[in-house]
Length: 158
Image (cartoon, rainbow, N blue to C red; front, side, top):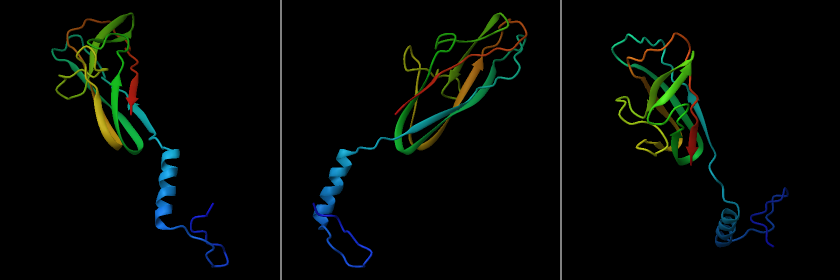
């Protein structure tokens, strides 16, 4: 087998393949060893701050999901339902529950879920992307004082 453009330390060239054979050899390597993108996802939680059952308006919060890939990649982000359902998620604590939801937009008109039951997912393309997560606790829920939380699983498909 011929070595491709082998340059020994003596400064003389022993053999060098032609351009056509170099291209063929590189194509064979590319087919034999396909590389796949690698991506990571990190999430900044949605913090609502203090909630007052007497407030006349909803309590909103914003978090973010960051995606980082080693090459330009098309991906989709979906969110689990947590303690409730995707149509109405639940913050649990102090022996009570607060209804809330997560949205893909600041207008709170599109529920972020897994694309089932009328929910939406978020897609992106590139090596890095940051996607805001908009949260809303609806007004008028009479709950006891305490801390409330939910755990949401973020799924990155690429």
